[in-house]
Image 1 (cartoon, helix red, strand yellow):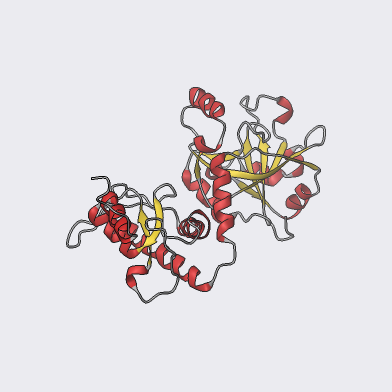
Image 2: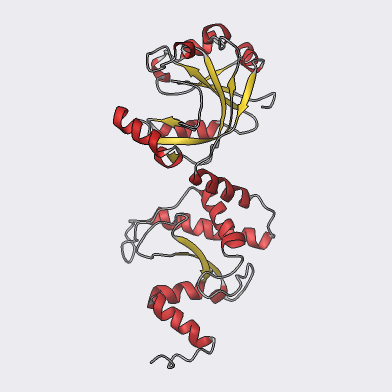
Length: 306
């Protein structure tokens, strides 16, 4: 945590464990607010035990429990990033009460015995939990209370991250790799084109534009970058020839293609990078006829099996 970092606080029923390795919310808007304000490496989020019986261990009530670092760039479906048994038990007892989550990627637990008492360490911040506007939200510790939290002893814990979280972190990491300026320009162009298509979904033009969906800009850009340099190795997903980052031949221009054209999503399971000509040909004639055409171009005798 940096000297200018923020100490955010969230009430929880227990310290962080692998049972529930996520910061979860009833309202997506609360997760979005934390995402916008939280900066990993600068800030920290502190779990504070509630005083209710839902905090089963009396030793955890009104105590500082854990210091966590959520990954703020994506709000996940909770059921996809916590263990299935945890999700099933939560559904049975509370229903779908916490459907939105930020994945926790780094964490530590406070280790003093007894655990730090919130009313002593952060009296003003702790009292602010009771304000109506802060119900179900997070609050912040300022000045001397912030400094008091930062002096407390903690012990790092190792988390077993869900497959969805690992895949997402790898995708984000791939986007940070240094790329040629021409490739970055193509990634930006394709990302913006997808965003514009999504915005126009349902609008009336010469025809009604189909509904489409896509991740946010940063996630979509990271996804396209990963496809280009890792998953596809710089090759067109349809014909296998090299993608060209700077070309005046529009037929060879890189194009983001939905694998299943009937599916309006540009999510990671339904997008690939192709040449524009390959994309248009596949959409016009279908994948089977397209692949037959490619085989013919490569000199395959298409009459051999007929």
